[in-house]
Length: 246
Image 1: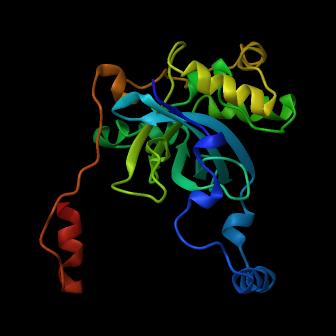
Image 2: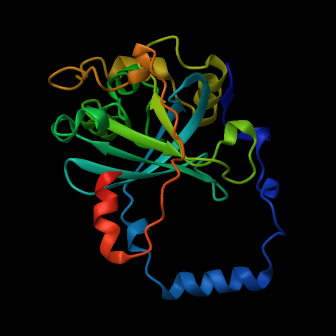
């Protein structure tokens, strides 16, 4: 079973191009002092979890989420491969409550995964957060659903994002997580998934149970994005009609 985490697989010098020049660093620092970064400043939570490709449980990656509350029912997260300064931005995840998920069209629901197992098993955690505060967050997350796309296939060793964005899924039962990947994360962050599980034993998933349309891979249905070639719209007046047809 393939797995991917940080460590010797990737180093910052693996990124194509010359190292940053002093002039570039000076320009970055100047912009940092003068510009506003409000969307980034609104990030309030760091979660670590594991994702796998929606058609291949064996391709698992460590995913660090940096999330913002858009409302009580919607979160948006930037996903990096590590929490370090030179981390690669590898994807995004949207997290919604059960109420929002149930309002989605049926075809849309199959693009989403549940979070109940991740939370209750202890494999989803918030690095550095005290257990009491973490559990309060997990109580909410256990009832939610997520939609994830990764743009950078780091498990293949790609040094830049190649190909199409890939739909990802999340773990739903014991025995799915690559043991070595899990052990590596536990050791690096000095945590115990087993201890997390004990502390979260009283948490509950979605009120109506996990919807059967979520986690489609459990029914043997892998999902792979494809590019569809269509006629290009060159007239703004025709744009709305074409968009409704796709």
